[in-house]
Each structure stands twice: as C-alpha cells, then as structure tokens.
Amino acid sequence: MTAYWVGVASREHVLAAVRGGFCQLNHGKEAPLRRLKPGDRLLYYSPRAGMHEGEQIQAFTAIGEVLAGEPKRVTSFPGFLPYRRDIRYFVGREAPIRPLLPHLRFSRGKVSWGAVLRRGTFQIEPEDYLLIAHAMGINDAAIPPESSLRSPNTR
Image (cartoon, one colour):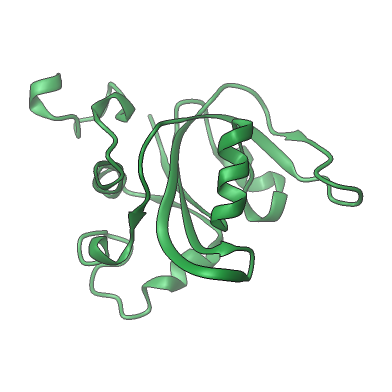
C-alpha cells in the first residue's frame, strides 16, 4: 500500500534534489529514508528559500515517487556524508500552504500548524496528498493506481 510523506527542506535544497533525482531528509539521516518504500509519494515543503535564510516561501515545492533501491551515502562536500534515495519527480508548480491549511488533516483547526513541520519528515493521509497534488497542478497520473482517491473519470 502506498504511503504519503512530507519532507521539509529549503527551496534551494529541494531544487538541487529535483535536479539530481534524489531525496534527502532530516539533514541527510538514513532512518527517514528507510521508512520510504518504492511507490510511496513524497512532497517537499519549503519554509524558506535558503536554509535558515532568504525569503519566506511557505509552499509545497516538489512532488515525486520513491523509486526502488536502498538509501545510499554520498559525499555532498568534505565532512558531510548524507544519505539519499532515488526519486522520480512530477512536473508541477509550487503550492502555497496557507490556502490549504483549513483543509489539511494535519493542520485543520490548529493554531500552531507549523509544529508538525518541525519534525522534518512525517506521514500524511491520502486525502491530504491529493489536495496538495491538485494544488500543485498534478493530474491523476501521480495518484497510485490502487488509490480510491482517483477521479471517477480516470478509473
């Protein structure tokens, strides 16, 4: 069964991951990547343009499908050896989070909606994934075939 995840990273880091066809979570830790299975979907949320700096973004900035294979360790720069996993990204647009907050299960009715994002990686409900995917302009091709969330006209 497909699982749906959100990873939190600056837009700068997300764009590098998209260009490289990989995902990296929680500052390169291996454990969050081991929870991902082939076919799972990953959304990236970017609070800012750069890590701890730059303009405020507060948007979902990338979306993709986890590919087969194990996490692998790479040399990002001397002294930093993060774990990464292969992912196929879908072509979409950024989706600001604020208009979605009243509708997302992980934020609905919560004043401190950002608290869950501080985890760095967390699983979301399929309905939340679909709402965000559609806000990003992603069509049903990015929705897993076994999902009951697909539009009736595409089954």
